[in-house]
Image 1 (spheres, one colour):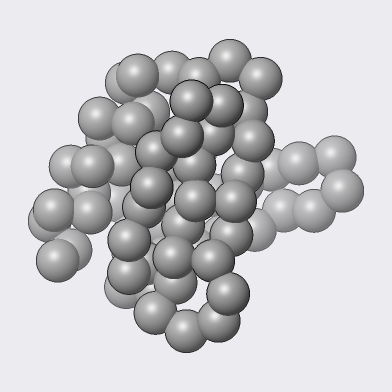
Image 2 (cartoon, helix red, strand yellow):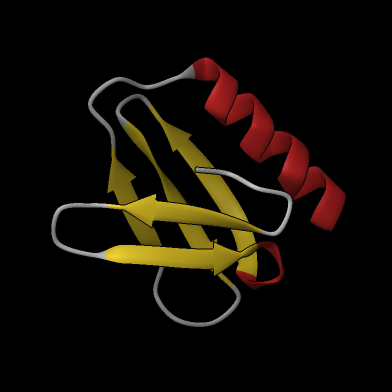
Length: 66
């Protein structure tokens, strides 16, 4: 889920919330994406059905917080 404040991941094993102020970069992949945080290691997430709208929203939010 993407909001104007954060990217939220809900998984079977773990949930995670990364605010846009923590995001340094987002790399879109064919089957997911990698989020590089301003501190700490990057996080890679895999999705079963990639959605181009999700990628567009992530790119828009990243450009607004840069």
